[in-house]
Length: 434
Image 1 (tube, one colour):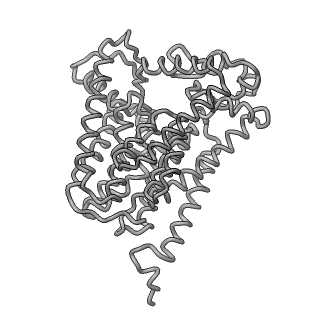
Image 2 (cartoon, rainbow, N blue to C red; image 1 turned 90 degrees about the horizontal axis):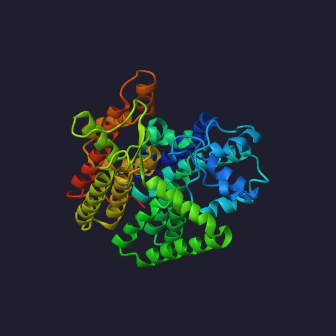
């Protein structure tokens, strides 16, 4: 039997794309069913913030535990009891006031359970669509779409990064989706749309604003200007609708976060890995417990030194990768630069939550094309195994292993990814498919 050319071709036409679509739909259904009852503790604060504003209690929006991280704000307990405790935990609200104000118009109309389920559907849909968006942005021309989709879904299905994001129904999924879509639009020549999308992402969580460096690196001045205008416009709108008082509370919350370093299993920051390794080697004394710790500068005076060293190293690595990637084909340069920057941002932030790496995970399949097949397959298998939610979570909960070993190993793997990007930039590579 002779298969049609559309099936046999390497460009992914015809049946190949149909299989991709089928796999994406199946993954959406399986993932949604598997996470339908997820705790959604990171989504809960958005509903609670909107609820408190709707009830005329702005003083409770930025309530938090003593160390900010680590649980439900005590001041929220009475309201949560009245709502029927729809979440096992409701972590503190750490977003700009604008979103709390907008949600205050929704919470009187939609209950917490319906809100949680609706956002879960949206987040799973965004992750599913992000596979296709990442492929448009970074898939090498010699790689079949089916290969990209299979690698992406295998990583999403098994990794601790995506599992954490879905388990907690993390708004970072929305931020990731907007960021990926912004750069897909940039590649398509829609600079205005790219600037608006990245601006909205940065107005939800501040950290995505760092990605504007790629607009500047690519000399896409219009996209950068639209980004700045979007952020400025949303800041002004936030002050107009939410008031100055709530913004003061927001800045106080941000200051508390910046003065606390969560040395916990869910923080895969290089700063944390360095402290854990230095403590294990006897170079530093880090006051942690088997479950981790929330360190402050008062308890650990050398934390500012570690933070400053991380910033200096981040700037140095940004310069190294910019110099290395600048001569490459524009499409290769954008794809590799976005992957490198996404890893660097998560690694060198004081708080590099596991879900920050989801965007890097979705861009990772492009590296399969820069390695010989005999190396690519085992490399991705090792990466997938070492970052699997089963190993990361169950090694501690079920087997009682020291979580610090897994934490350091995951950081080391991402440094390995950076090395592959740097090394591959010195060799010719296929232009990503558009």
